[in-house]
Amino acid sequence: MVIGACGQVGTELVLELRKKFGAEKVIATDIRQPENEELKYSGDFFELDVLNKDALYQLVKSQNIDTVYNMAALLSATAEKNPEFGWKLNMEGLFNVLDLAREKHIAKTFWPSSIAVFGPTTPKSETPQDCVMDPATVYGISKLAGERWCEYYHKRWNVDVRSIRYPGLISYKTAPGGGTTDYAVEIFHKAILEGKYISFLKENTMLPMLYMPDAIKATIEITHCEAELVKVRSSYNLAGFSFTPAQLGAEIAKEMPAFTLDYAPDFRQQIAESWPGSIDDSAARKDWNWHNDYSLNDMVKDMLLNLKKAYSIA
Ligand SMILES: NC(=O)c1ccc[n+]([C@@H]2O[C@H](COP(=O)([O-])OP(=O)(O)OC[C@H]3O[C@@H](n4cnc5c(N)ncnc54)[C@H](O)[C@@H]3O)[C@@H](O)[C@H]2O)c1
Image 1 (cartoon, helix red, strand yellow):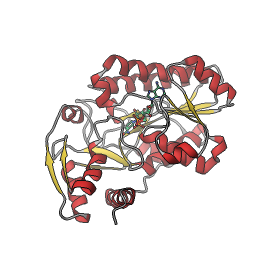
Image 2: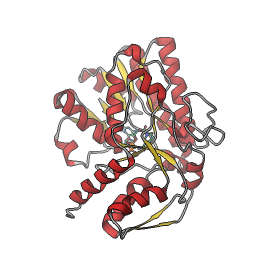
Image 3: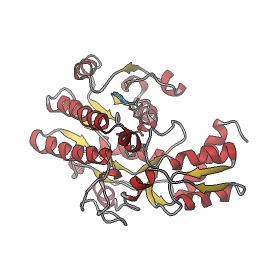
Image 4: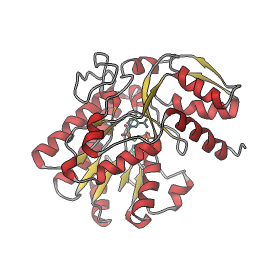
């Protein structure tokens, strides 16, 4: 079962899980109806609020669910606008699923953390798996608390929970849901439709990023590998590549020479400045054999190709 299946990650996760394990084995759920046509027609969908513990329990039982991917959350920029609800959704949603696992109604669960767990005094470059973590946003605080609870549930009650600290995720199938790295998706749409983009982050703001096919691959791999391989039960660092808005703009301009990029930083600049520029993901590489397939250049080419198709531009 995927909770939050209509989001940027959930949509592609459901489609890939259905491809891998069969459509009848994967239940998509969200608080809202799916807009993505492929998601809508590829298998079962149920409306579910992760905060409704009884409804969650009923669905898990009636559908005989063994694994839950819990993607429902308020993201960094959105949660800053509504901190109380950001905390409520991100924490209570996690507890509701962890408790199902603790009570043995499900066998295992995946829950994503984020690079937002790091903060201003965290080492900025090649940020280690274990280091100072002083998140500056309510989103980051909820993810760091969530990580500690995941580890606690594992140690105390042997809950099989697995987690990755996603960096910024870049994709073309579903729009991003209000994060600080959303510029790295919007820029492609604007490049194709208008030939120009105004970035809400400053030109030299370096952030770690990952292309969605790699994020989905990692999510499924860590969830389905042997339990003994998962040595970190809080959350694994994970990385693909790092770039600044200026570097991404230059890559796009290689494919679209007329593309122009300007900058008008807003409140998200401050959030971005509290995050690492690059991530050391050697623990994930060693423990469960993680490796990314896409480089920055591969990602840019693939994004432009697929978005041009989607907009019916040759
Ligand atoms: N996208 C990124 O760049 C990124 C980076 C780091 C971590 N993450 C994490 O990955 C997970 C998925 O992120 P995303 O980008 O797909 O987010 P998103 O905002 O695109 O999707 C979240 C989905 O959850 C649903 N939802 C909201 N409230 C719900 C509720 N009460 N019950 C059930 N569903 C509810 C929303 O309708 C939405 O479809 C989140 O935990 C997020 O923190 C994402």
